[in-house]
Image 1 (cartoon, helix red, strand yellow):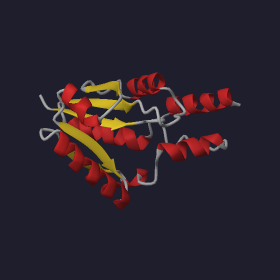
Image 2 (cartoon, one colour; image 1 turned 135 degrees about the horizontal axis):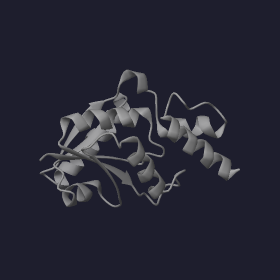
Image 3 (tube, helix red, strand yellow; image 1 turned 180 degrees about the horizontal axis):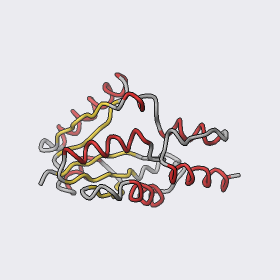
Length: 161
């Protein structure tokens, strides 16, 4: 069975993320969506909230599992018996960074490959940061995230006020 990890902060998960998850789930036998617990960032949502949201929006994909992780991605991949890391590319600037990371990961864990998925053009501009900024100023985020995620984001910003 071929297992892959699609890592990210997913703060919050967007339609762009979901597009990559859906496509990767068709290529891999088992896809683990790895929610990064990065203490150096101050996310809008806790790790537990992000895992919960991802489980809700991927429930229809039987071969997708959602887990949180901390530390090095390649260590998580090896621990999870994953032979592939999935990464999404929106622009050439993403590629430069992701290429460097994939080469470093390959040096640390030679049995773990990276597969890049180019973004669907309709999501090429989209990021979690943009979603949060639009929502913070009361803008409509319905075109960027699923309805339940939009509600979670709105609720979170209401709590902060």
